[in-house]
Length: 327
Image (cartoon, rainbow, N blue to C red):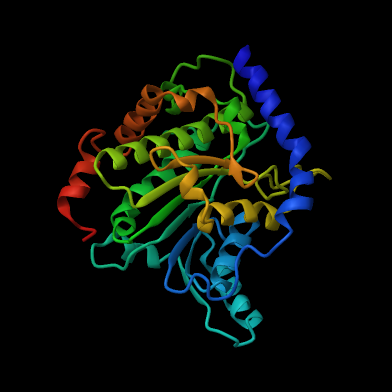
């Protein structure tokens, strides 16, 4: 009951404050300037619309080499061409498509400086759905897929002098629960299925996994990778195809992207971390669910996620470090 009260409070607080803060604080100055990010390589998932689109565009126009990781490769190609036209040949935009990620998994690829796991789904009001892999769909897309991509790209990130993993999270994680047994098809449900609770649980798992990853890297003296989960605000989005994600108090996607951009490049962010991890909301450290504050609970999520991926929970990171594939 107490967890539910806290979830309602955190959500109500976001709804009440986000429009005020965005209007009077976040718009006060440009976040990025041209050529500020020259030489940096960035991957943004879900970058053909919404928050991902605006995030990728701003990073590209600031000089970063941006890889658009998305399913709709044809749409991404057209977007990249349009951005280059918008630049009016004043500079060269470095934008690549999803295929470039394959090179990043190999040990000979260049360093990756920023990974932004933005892609996600919300199947609001729908019954339980499972992926072809037998996982509940919110968990598959919002957590497991992002975690797998992060682990595959970690050697490339360790090549950089400093790197950041940015997971686009949600205040909705306060509505979630840690129930790994319910992630798989055929599992006995411990409570009546709720799409909102399922979405919240996937975002909670995503956050806890990232926190566990950060703690493990620090324990191995690998402190160059900063791990940040960010609530971008309650944003008008295409998460729902019928347009139900709309409201006068909501932020538009470009405003939500500013929160993500702040965590991606903000100079103050590293100073507000614990074991190189932070949860941000409204461009400042936010309050996480109490479940995410428990290291043992985070390790439960870590262990189950790696088992699902067919990796060793205890040995995988050690093998990456020992392989020196990031040297």
